[in-house]
Amino acid sequence: MLAIGSLALTACGQGEEPDAGAGDAAPATAADPDAPAEIRFSWWGADVRHQRHQKIIDAFEAENPNIDVVPDFTDWGGYWDKLATVTAGGDTPDVFMQEDRYIREYAERGVLRDLSDLDIATEDLDPTLLAAGQLDDAQYGIPTGSNVYSVIANPDLFEAAGVALPDDTEWTWDEYVDIAQQISDGTPEGVYGTSDYTYNETGLMVYLRQHGQNLYDEDGELGYEDELLEEWFQRSLDMQASGAQPGAAEALGLPTGQTFLATNKAAMEVTWSAQLGILSDTAGTQMEILRVPGESEFDRTGMYFKPGMYMSMSADTEYPDAAAAFIDYFINSVEVGEKVLSDLGLPANATVREAIADQLTPNEQIAAEFIADLQDEVVDAPPSMPVGAGEVASIIKRINEEVLFERLTPEQAADQFRTEVEAVIGG
Image (cartoon, rainbow, N blue to C red; front, side, top):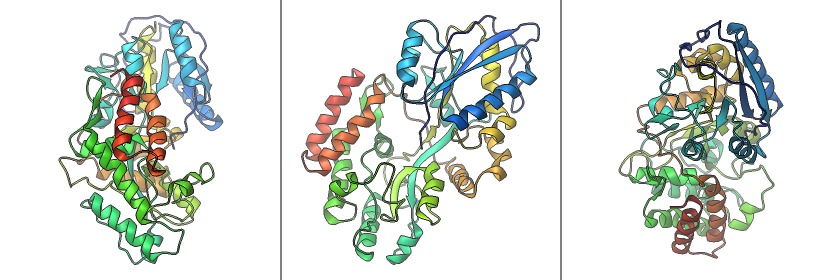
């Protein structure tokens, strides 16, 4: 879902003081026509994205003939190494895509420009989504789109087991376990109520937030009690033992890219809402999106809007007005929304999202409605991830495997996770 590629970074010129305005919802207001500017825009992705972005650049340049946007792109693989290299060499792209695991790192290194004092319209962006790109009251990234961690369910397997879909506004984690067990018991061998949910730190973040805690606090240090992480692992271990979810060996034996939900071997999977379409198409049945269990059970809701990615600006750009005009156009233009659709997440701008709704696929429309229904329930965004957070996904995946193979107890796993994560984030 988050398969997004990396940047090939090249040099370009820069130079003007911020005084020209950017546009509002669409299209953006042209910058000063007497101030020619050349800015480099870097992103990652596959060929289809590159073609879309070139069309966006062409449209922007047609409205802003004084601004030349130099495209700079490659795949995801070597992106962060390349970005680290060019920024260290003082050749940061004027505008470039960012990801939430690295916002703090590049902001604290002085690479990112605070966008809050530039003419970039953000009124139509959800405040909690916008806050995901903030650090110390500065706006270092403008989100391009929205996604949310959720439960995707296969109604056919629920029906086959004689189990009703839950009321996801009220269901608890115990009900999630019970439902998974009933489905496993009521379907043929090899079909499970759910797949393992504990391999991903995003799900853990939601669980911790439900209890009023955070994986990372505002200072970039770990901000939770180990007992909650022990519960997180123990519940999954118990479900594996009872047959409510697959065993570790079976789960790890899946071919790359396959999931139990996609192959009709599990009725539920905790994953991103953007996966609804591909999972429905692969399984050959219409899936449904549900809230994560526990949203009404504990101290508060834990679900949050996750930006697909961010638009950031170099702190050293010589053309901040031109760069701001391009970011504003990219985020707020309906014409851009029509070209990008859901490629960068459902458009962060609510006006754009509404304008292109009829051009989305049916599953994308369902996901958009699901996100809209959460507007009054999502309280805030998690604190910015600390430097080193990019390594945490692989840490929790590896430790989770050790738990499910019973080589680590949940208590040992929680202790090891804390030790390893503190080592990479310096907390």
